[in-house]
Amino acid sequence: MLLTAFALELADTQAKVRRDVTDRVHERATLATSLLDAFFQSSAQQLGEDPNRYGGRVVSAATMEAGRGSHAYLLLLDPAGERVLAASGGFTAQARADLADSAAVRLVRDGHRYGLGNILPYGGSGVINLAVRIPTDNGDRILVAGMLPSTLSQFLVAELAKIPGVAGAYSYLIDGNRALIASTNPRLATGHVFRRPAEVRALAQSSGMINGRYYDQVRFSSSTWRLLLAAPARPLFASVSGVRRWLPWGILASLLLVSLAAFALARRAQRAGDRARAANVALGDLNDELARANDALSRRAAELARSNDELDQFASIASHDLQEPLRKVRTFTGRLQTMESERLSEKGIDYLERANSAAARMQQLVEDLLRYSRVATQGQPFVPVDLAVVAREVLADLDQEVERSGATVTVGELPTINADPRQMRQLLQNLVSNALKFARADATPTVELAATHVDRRAVLTVRDNGIGFEPRYEERIFRVFERLHGRHEYPGTGIGLALCRKIVERHGGSIRADGVPGVGATFTVELPTDRTEEVIVIRSDDERGAHMRDAEETLHV
Image 1 (cartoon, rainbow, N blue to C red):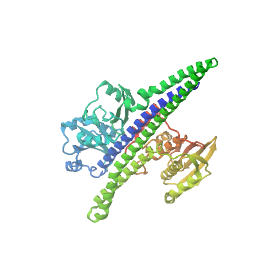
Image 2 (cartoon, rainbow, N blue to C red):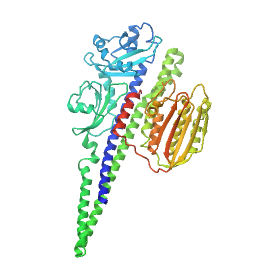
Image 3 (tube, rainbow, N blue to C red):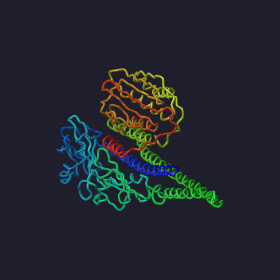
Image 4 (cartoon, rainbow, N blue to C red):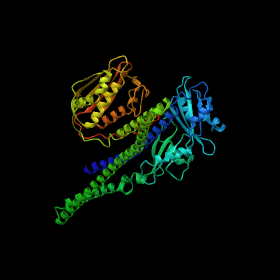
């Protein structure tokens, strides 16, 4: 029975380590895709930042040329994306003919805030369309910029090179026609089309093993692109492959043989002292084998911890590399506003304020992404936490926001549970702040925070009288970057409720939302009261696919 239990535990441990490795690869791909998606959404917002320039009844070629910048061309289309209203230089007959096949225009026409298309023929290098819908006094219009792949790939290759991986691993950015946009593989040039059977199979599945290599891909939102990570299986799964995979089973087989030998020797011990001494030696060997098996399991646990550290280091590096130029943008635009305000026109001051605001939003987005990625990797140990004390601290932090909105916040009796103190404060602050933010204009905001205790589980409720939401959105609001309203209507990055869900799952609990439009919303959180260690949530293939679809539909960064 002991050997059977050991064999089952060993098989389960190897399977879990393998799942953990694939989850880490997918998390790296998702984070890298989110950061690149953020760059392109910011570029699209800057492209259509001045709707007045492109909103006249007639827009001149000179106006288009002035906004062209380093792009191959810049053109203005009607809301249906079928008629060219104005165009800059560089808009060739080839570009006009291929406009009907522009995936970027099709995405914007279908309701996306912006669209990023495939590589289209243009001269000797090709062109990639970036389209954005802009509202004007004469109705919505679609602004399209033609970006040269050769210029774009230099930036993208530099970003892909920051994704950590094992020796022989490569990262590929591929458009909807299976054409390569950028990669860390020096043997493949931009424009290479993936046609080989193994490549086609890799692109047809979200993740899996093909010909000794492991593939994982994540699609971009508002684009036909996808990010494909490819790594040789042997070094990637080194902790559970080759000799390391079969060594524990060899030890187990040895234990079985030794046990049989010990049993036989024990039966003969009554007839001969030599047999008894041999049995003692066999039992000593058995203890040595068990110790070596424990050492092997400890090494695998250490390797898993190193993988977590690598992911955290990647997130920190990515955050620093993005925030450093943003800090400089905010510093120098602030200095310009202070030192040169008398010599700048009103439009110039407006442009500086917009640039500073966009940089601030991007900086907040990067900080929220980093906070989301560190829920599981940098959590504190579970200790008794008085939620009543936490609620008082949260309301003290939100004092100005409560006073400004004139809200009434009621806090009932709250229990003490075993939890991460810092994350409990994040959870309550996000839920209360969310209730204050989505208040109705025609009613004084009220927020009720209460709790009940059911079968060693605390059930917390946060109820408000705000704008509420449609019941069909009750799952979507917990997705990363999901927003039901525009940024100008309600501020925020769309990560707050996703962060709440991740914190609750780490504590072995659940969270749900119920809303009625124009009446209010209620968030219900169930948490165990006596949990002593965190829960590691391993997503199934279906859930991971749903997360990829979330990124495709909602990450307009």
